Length: 104
Image (cartoon, rainbow, N blue to C red; front, side):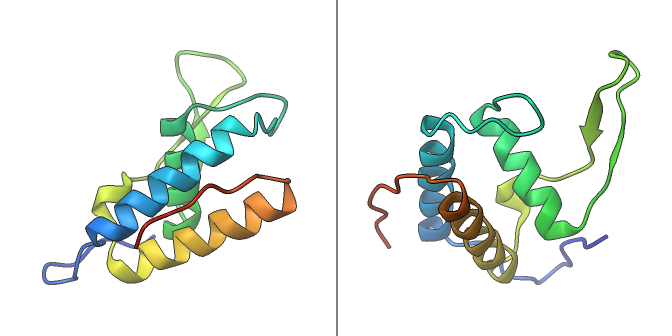
């Protein structure tokens, strides 16, 4: 599991804008994953958990569901945010996401 260390440079504002634009594009593509569609914040947690190699645990309030032990994108370093953008691009391309325009 990775953690931000003091002094690690946080993701940039440009990366934040691109991440959320890509998440919007993924949500607007109505992708069904594991039999369900996810909200913007759920996709954020899925991708940050992938970048941070974090795990899922059983949800104590809902039998059969899981909770991702992830972090928020605002906690990512520049390097992790770049990795997340690449992961989302590959995922979206594999699932037919129609990408909008991102400003850098």
